[in-house]
Image 1: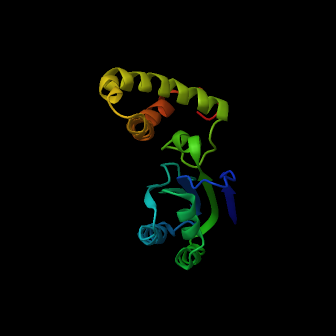
Image 2: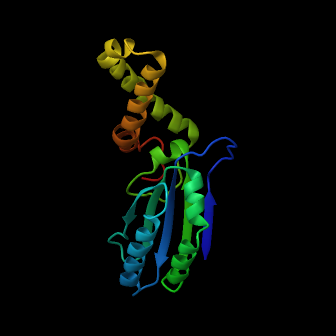
Length: 195
């Protein structure tokens, strides 16, 4: 059984970065073969343009938990579509058929990618208004701090360069430092019924 959920919004002029979460339930006794398969498909996708990396989350200690989650990222939706439509991917998926009994794939863009909790990468994103509030709570102090620390230096730069530096710092810090921590810190609010 395969379920494919695509949360990408139509954006005629855009080609945003995307994150996909593939959840696969492995047949009992086929775990080792699945691990080998996962290593192989990740090696194959690594050769595709725009691939940024992936994480594999193995089943927990619960004996009823047979679900593997693979999170992988591409720099642009068009590069992910090229991978999705490739013969190489089709060959790897065909090899997995005897190993799995259920598969779900979810594609995320935008704020949803900041709200993918590492411990539960396959779960739905929280409501958008909650994502917006938590993001604002991160952006406001961060931009204030950047302007206090770098404002005098940034003020000497032409506006386009100043904006370039400011946005590059903001996006990098938000993606790799701030939002992973904010997601954990505020998990009681965006995910109250999922704890």
